[in-house]
Amino acid sequence: NAGVTQTPKFQVLKTGQSMTLQCAQDMNHNSMYWYRQDPGMGLRLIYYSASEGTTDKGEVPNGYNVSRLNKREFSLRLESAAPSQTSVYFCASSELREGSYEQYFGPGTRLTVT
Amino acid sequence: GEDVEQSLFLSVREGDSSVINCTYTDSSSTYLYWYKQEPGAGLQLLTYIFSNMDMKQDQRLTVLLNKKDKHLSLRIADTQTGDSAIYFCAESNTGGFKTIFGAGTRLFVKA
Image 1 (cartoon, rainbow over the protein chains, first blue to last red):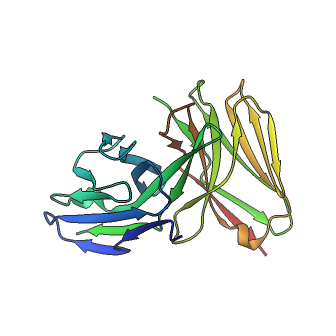
Image 2: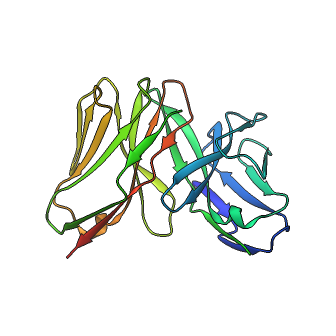
């Protein structure tokens, strides 16, 4: 199993450009997440999808959109990139285990917006 | 809202014990987690503790929970250079698949 995969690994955008970050998991998990990681701020939830066909806003959704394409794939779109969106983006999926949701993370996408 | 706080840096010598501390605010937290992030990688679950437990031991890792003070700690015995990483404390509620993460503690292990 590959687990959670993300593409691309690195990306540089100019202000105003758009792009889509791709995420896929092969563990048959229902729930998927997008986080951003900024120095000293930990992980902040952007959007999540509790199950196929549903998406909900997290803590910092402004400037982003998501699509849960099917059970495996959950993409994150930046319509008009801004320098404040320079960050490392992590996709995760989770499974219910003993009442708790253990999260499995992808390797991340490092995005720079100039 | 819910918040999870931890100190940003810890430096120890190889062979010593490391203790990473965390406080949280949500009294309804049911599960508390420790995740490890190595350079250039995503987070990986190290261990977790259910809120009705005081302690959990797993090989070199000991998790202590003081529910009254909302304080969680992770002790790594015989710390090795391979333990150098960022350690994240996190919490979630029962049935809640949203997890709140702290900012992470960067552990430096000196040889």
